[in-house]
Amino acid sequence: MTISGDGKVIYNLDYRSKNDDAWYTSGVVLENGKRLRVKLEDFKSGDADEVFSMGNFSKHDELEEFLRRFRPVSVPVEENECSTVVEGMTVCATYKGDGSVRYFDAIVDGVCYKEHKPEKCVCTYLLCWKHGPGEGTVTAENIVDVCFIKSGAPDPRVTDFAKLVMEKLSSQSSLIPKTPFLSRKTSSNQTFNKLQEFSGDGDSCFSGFSEEKGRFKTELIDQDRDMGGVKETESHHFIILENLEKDLSPVLMKDFIYEQTSIPTHTYVFQSLSNEPYARGIIIVDSKQKLKRIHEFISNPNHFIVSTFSGRPWVIAEDMLRAETFNIMQILQPKSENKNTGNKLMVVHLGTKEYMRAKKSKDLYMEFRNHVNRLVKRLDMEEKKKWRSSSTN
Image 1 (cartoon, helix red, strand yellow):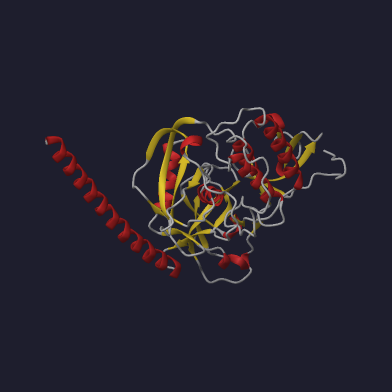
Image 2 (cartoon, rainbow, N blue to C red):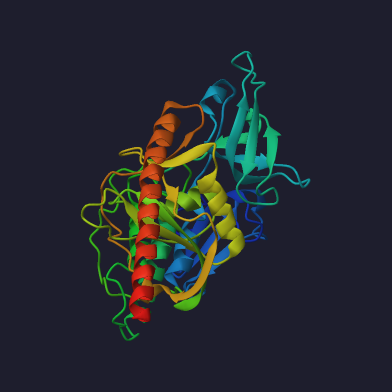
């Protein structure tokens, strides 16, 4: 297909197909300024093209999910670079378990390094697949099957199309009466910020283990927009976290969870008391199965999720999966989504110094929490005794 002004399709993107959830080397064409055509390099005939129009998006969440499907083309790992592929890293790799050859994201679960010549790697990599037909399973792969995930701003035509969709959604939301329960930091602003991150010069937040460089730098507009399609009242599955950094951005938290688990979530960080050195937060999903996967990731004894600022580890408040019916907009008011604090999140693994520091920090917090829990139980008992005593008089 000939593109006006370009002459040809430039295959400079990884695209995660809606048809089979696999990553494909792709190029995009913006047609008449209203439709985005995604062309797969392996299917240049056009039979596998995926076309998106502005009418396909009715919620900001849908636009966010769409943007996450794009990133710069992954780079194959060279034979002499095998030592740079380490445990805990997220990579894009060839999956052949179902007889086909497709690319999916995976976490390096283990590495069996072997001595070899620089030009021929014989190491083995254990990959835990994050999505696709092998999701949740671990397979042994060779270096030729592994690619580095690149960060950075992809093709500007994706950004141009997303901006058009944002304008359409914003014009629609301006016609909806405002509700007094809306937070000033709504998901439409989150989408706007994602769009700015996606199109900026800094690294993209849509690939595993990407480095952030001063994002959340844009000036917010129309801060009283709607919640971007979040269903107001329904049954939500959630877990509550403790020991978070007080200035942790819910957007960073949400993107980190997606990078590690490929599960879209709603995340909130609550205001803490002035004398508390930590904050609490909540992760919300739409199914028990998704929540279980996130719970298993956070509670995995072989690693901790920590703040890069202080090494403070996440702690699950209750070792149970909860489900309740509530109104997200009324009950959960997020903190400021757009502080550029420099605080990031990372996974530290068993056997490292960072892991030992995180374990000591968690043990200290658990000692404090257990002490508080004992005081709470004592207070409850004393209040009940006082109530029973007064009711008998």
